[in-house]
Length: 134
Image (cartoon, rainbow, N blue to C red; front, side, top):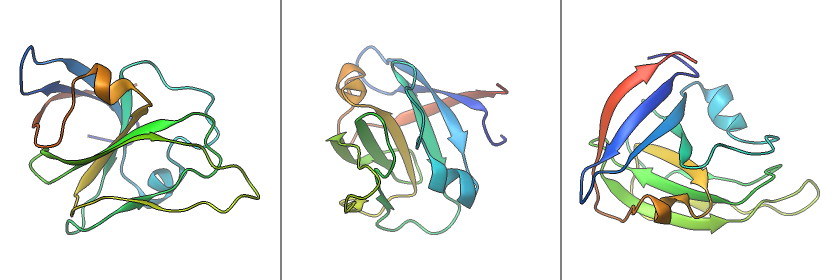
């Protein structure tokens, strides 16, 4: 897998909804995230791959242009925490960190409301299916 690949996942419950997520794995692209983007496709996320040890991780909403759901995952792709509807923070405002409730290995950022639309809940497992170059 390489930076920018589009990853495919299935939610391992119920009807097993499918979604895609753009891979970001370097420190620079993880820091950039979705900042300055005007939109993200409906039901598509950005997958933050961390290679260090699982820990309580933080994101912030600086220079975001739309609200997000942040899904925190452990190393087995089990959802350990979901932050729903995180609001953008503009330049000049004090931006607070949005921190995982539990130790997390990875994160996926979705448009606000997409986690609910996909039926994602804490404890659910995701199955990685494939990676495709953009």
